Length: 193
Image 1: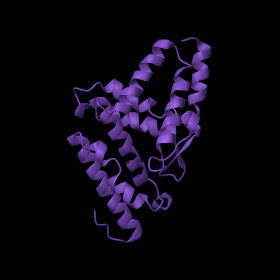
Image 2: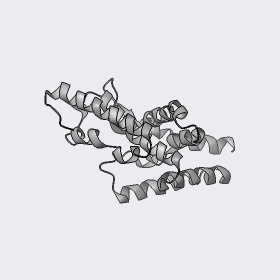
Image 3: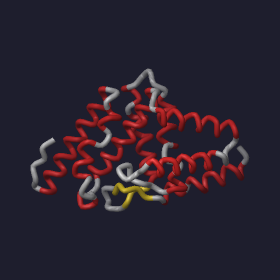
């Protein structure tokens, strides 16, 4: 890839460092899309030993690119995202990938397709971790940053995508316990799971 195309592409995805998500950090500021993707990739790297038959490099690549479209569209929280929003984001990814060399575009397009289909174990792991990173972020943030629906969402978000492996099921269970403790400690109200 020539230097100009490389720099231009990086200039567009730089917006992932600027575009914020619905999640807040433990220091009280909104998290960027790039920060979410970075930690998601770290999660994939750290759990690699749990999945020795998986292509960890592929999972990490999925984690790093999964929100590329949000460089153009910005972030829409999963619980507000519609089919129309999903299509707009897919079109943004196509537009973005068209700036790359043919080989790189084909390679990343194939990864996006695999991620969307959720048939491979690599895609299933990426998706489970993506959901669970959001729950972790909410548990780390001050509860004052939560909107009302998150008091129930944080207890169930990602359950379906975590079901495919024992390790992700267990991680989801521990995160649910953490969410319950946070809600009970902050509100003084007993939570019935």
